Length: 335
Image 1 (cartoon, helix red, strand yellow):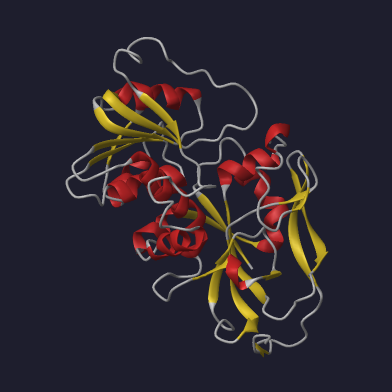
Image 2 (spheres, rainbow, N blue to C red):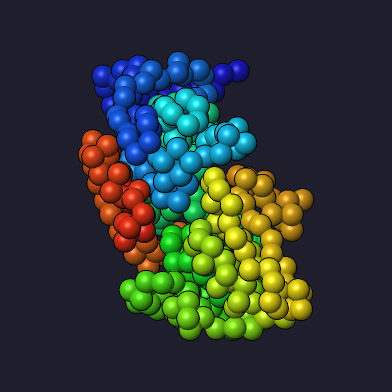
C-alpha cells in the first residue's frame, strides 16, 4: 500500500527549481532545472540553507578533480560530469513541503547540491532535531567527517592530541577531541587569529613553529605539504597521524626521512565515504548521520559559520569565497 501523502504546505508549486552549477574554471551560474516527478513516498523539500564545503568545492570550482576520481567524487543527486558543467554540493537543509505523513513540516538535512527545491526519497534525509537551528545544521556533513576521523584514529581520554589545520574540519575534530576527559588538545594553524576561536572551542593553540611534539595522536587537515610536515614533526614515538586532507590533482611531498622510521610513525587516511572499520559492524550511514547531527546542539559551533549570502548572489560571491586567500570558514547560502 502506498504511503499516505500530505499536501504541500505552499501553493503554486512548479515542476522546476533553481540550482547552482559550476560551469567553467572559477565560474558558476544559477540555472533552472526540472524537478523529477514525485512518486508516492518521495519528499519535496524547500531549501532554507546550504553550506559551501570550501575544501572540496574549491577543487570542483577550479576543475581540479583528477580524472581517476570522477566517479568516486560524484555527490549524491549530482547532475553533470566533471570537470564541467556540474551541479555539486552536499550540505542542504530544508523543510519538507510534501511527502509521507509524519515528515511534512520537518526540517531535514540532505546531501544535495545547492538548489532551492528538490525531490528525494525519505531515506536520504536526516531529521534536524529542535535543539539544532537549521542554519547550524549545514555543518552536519563536516561533523560526520570529524566523528568518523576520531573513530579511525582511536582517540581516547587523556590523549595528547594535535590538530594541524584550523579550517572547519580541523576545528570540529579539535572540538570533539577537547571533550574527551583529560585530553590535551592543541590546534595548530598559520593564522594567529585562530587562537581566540580555539579557546572558545576548548583547546589550546600554536603556530607551526611552536607546535608541541610528542603527541599521542595527530590529525592533519590543512591540505598543504607544509602542514603535513608539521603534523609528522608533532608526532611522538609510535604515534598515529591521521590524514584528513584531500589534495585533488598533483603530488604532495612528505618528509618521510629524518626520524619518521626511527619513531615508527603511522600515517593513515580517513575518509567519510565509508564508516570506520571499528564501527562498521554496528553502524550504518543513517546512524552515523544522526549522531553527527545531535552533536551540533552546541551554540558555540555557530562561530564556524563566518559568511551568510543570499542564494541569488552566489554566482557573484562564490569566486571570492572559494579563492585561496579567503579568511573565513563556512559560507552559508540563505534561500
